[in-house]
Figure 1 (tube, rainbow, N blue to C red):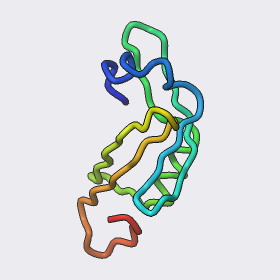
Figure 2 (figure 1 turned 90 degrees about the vertical axis):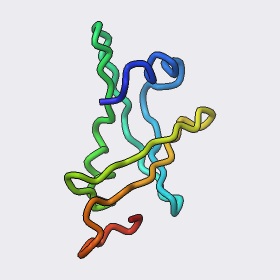
Figure 3 (figure 1 turned 30 degrees about the horizontal axis):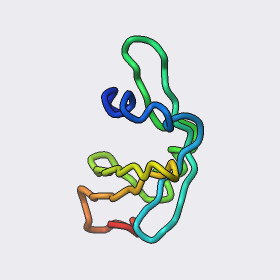
Length: 91
């Protein structure tokens, strides 16, 4: 889930498709899903699994997201919990 304070602050641009971009410039379009109940739960949906698979994400890995407002793009930095025996291209 994405923090609701962040979603409130950027609600004017956070809807529909957004892009996730890693350090080598590769991009993945994902759908930004927002529930409109009082909990304001938001997450990336649909193509998130493709992003996770393509980047060899494992349980315990950490992704840091930086929103580039003008482009609806999130720069993503991946921190791998176990860098030994990893094939992740961006760790």
